[in-house]
Length: 287
Image 1 (tube, rainbow, N blue to C red):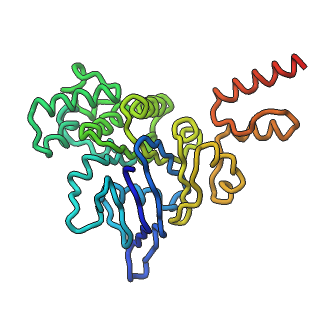
Image 2 (image 1 turned 45 degrees about the vertical axis):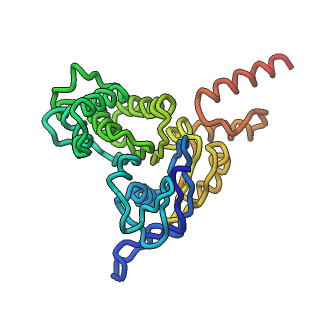
Image 3 (image 1 turned 120 degrees about the vertical axis):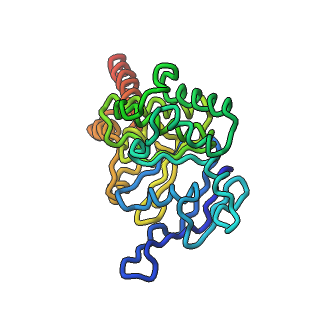
């Protein structure tokens, strides 16, 4: 197990007229190898929750145990924690500030006081992981890049810390379709090839359905639902009550089945739908 959250509560502006309970008795296990989709309407507590996972916010009450260590204790080593748990904020390119891409990605490793050769290798490897050519881009200004490339530089800066867990808060926000597909493709590669545990916060049910193997649904600061992608998206009515939807292709297949067609209605992607429809139409042709 990598992370265990025990009875986590968090209150913004306590003891003031603006007091708000953002997290309400959260209990959660996150295991090595998980690819988690964290969903919920705006204000449900998603961003507050993920900021607890690398110590940016400390809970009002409760414990967070990571690899056997209580990160909520007074003597917790948050620097060591942030090497293990990397957090990429929404619009992370707004945090770029160095004059070259190399320097921006190297910023974190330099703060760890690593040897120059180790820093060099980490920058090079991180750029490769996000699909940025090292030789042609390392000396360019990050501000000359496209939106999608800037986003990849920002993610590379987190990867250069060699995290075991990567948390991405709306990583495709504001990107055009091409940039969005590139970022999602690289995230999938990181999970499949590097074995990094990933927590993805997203409003896109299509992206969640295509990428993750476990979904956590938040509502009013609580975990409302938890399960595999198929288990969660089967519960369309419950999701709708929480102000959420299901992937469009899943909705289409459910409606198609309700018209008397004997097909699966737990389809999550267009690719799955294509295979299911071909098999169904062939079976009808052979009937």
